[in-house]
Image (cartoon, rainbow, N blue to C red; front, side, top):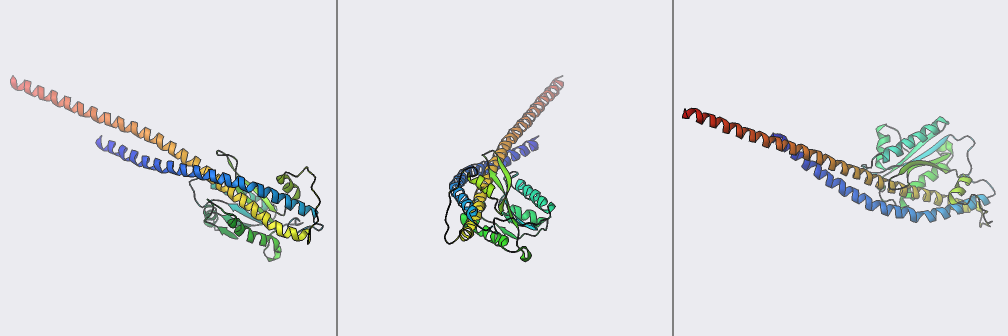
Length: 305
């Protein structure tokens, strides 16, 4: 029984060390998710006003702009997937990847050729393992993204949609990311960034049912739109990056809390087993002592006769 007790003690020590690590990771994630939430809230007013500006300019443009005009027969679409560089976040990455795969299957079912762009090592690993070609990939900033990162991602995407499809361009640009709803709820969502749907853009900006003022543009509405649309795409990608970062930290916090709780339950179970093994060992030792004493007493009584 001594060997069994040593095994339980070693396992308790190991699980205790693991519990300390998961508890520390839970606390780190909890502090980071608060900062990420603040960044999301801080980016919202800029994104809202920029969306209103794009809506106003696009409405005032006389000719349909290439980035607001849907192709009659779209043949190629780009999908940008936002995943994370690190794991230990429950189903965070798998849900985003599943949403991207579902969107890809839908677009391919509609006859479009899909080009994949991925942010985060987890998403890249998923496609590399399946030997699927990526048009672009970025890593190293998913926990704390900056606006510069969003500009880096947006540049090739805008270039692709401005190119003719015969030259490798795309007709549509979609994004898949994880929306931060609350500390307990994060949802993988997809949205079409380009071409812009003015009704949807106005709805996002809260202007769907309000009258918009009339503007005069210099040099022209089309030139202003050329300047605003890249900023619009960058702001949308930046907001999605922040949403994904906040969601990842929240998912990590939840996963590490669950791991910490499970480690505590396992320690309690192992402690009960160790106590039972120790009690059995003590009982056996007492039984051996009592048996030895009885045998010695019998031997002494026999010698006296």
